[in-house]
Image (cartoon, rainbow, N blue to C red; front, side, top):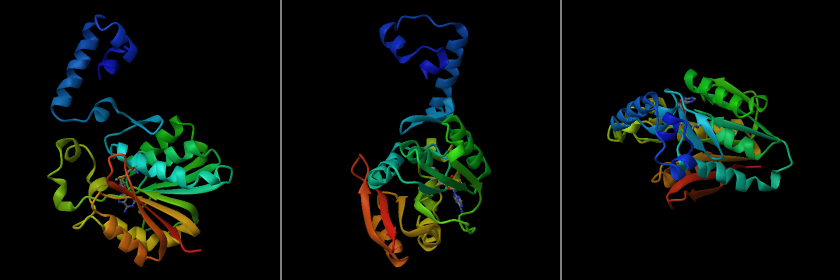
Length: 255
Ligand SMILES: C[S@@+](CC[C@H](N)C(=O)[O-])C[C@H]1O[C@@H](n2cnc3c(N)ncnc32)[C@H](O)[C@@H]1O
C-alpha cells in the first residue's frame, strides 16, 4: 500500500526508506490505512491482486482470487504438459475475475477458451483482465447460468465454484463477508449445490476422455468424489495445496 500511495518502488523502500513523501501521497496512504483497519482487503483497496504470473484487476463485484486457486492452475499445467503443442479448448465455469482461465491460457499459447458467469460484473471484469493480458483473441466470456446449454464440447473444464455452507458465511472474516459477493461464496445448505450441478452437467460440456478439475473446500473431497463417481467420471483423484490441504479434484470423462 505504501508503494501504491507514494509511487515508490519496493527497492526504493528498502534502499532509501528515509525518502520524504509529499502531502498528497501521505493523505492517500492514510486513507488506505483507515480502510484496511476497517477490514477491507488490500486487493479491494488497490483494485488489483497478484495471481499466478500476473496482476488481475479486481472489481467490487468479483471474488478476490485466492492463492489457493493457483493449485488448480498448477494441476492443469502438470496434467496437460504433454499437450503443449496441440490446440486445446478450455471452459472455466464461474469465471469471476478470469484468474483460472488466464492462468491456463498464459501457459498454453495454443489454447483458447470460454469463461462463463451468472454475474454481469464478473463477466465484465474477466473481459477486462483478458484484454489487459493480451488474451482477448483467445477468449469468449458469456454472461449466463451454468445450467444453460452450451453449443460446444471442451477438452478441459475448470471450476472454482461457490462452496461455502450458507450458514457458515456469516461466521467468516469481515474481509470475506463484507467484500466477496455472496453469489461467489454460497454453496447452499451443505456447500455442495454447485458440485451437484457440475457432476450432472459436465458430461455434456466435455469431449470424451476430457479433463475436469474443480477446486474444493478442504473437507469436501469425499462428498465431491462421490458425486463425480455417481456422475460417471473415472480417474478421480484429490490434490493438495501448498499448505497440505485437499484443494483440487481431477476426473476424466469416460472415453
Ligand atoms: C468462487 S467464485 C470463483 C471465481 C474465479 N473463478 C476464481 O477462482 O477466482 C464462483 C463464481 O461462480 C459464479 N456463479 C455462481 N453461480 C453461478 C451460476 N449458476 N452460473 C454461472 N456462474 C455462477 C459467481 O458469480 C462467481 O464468479
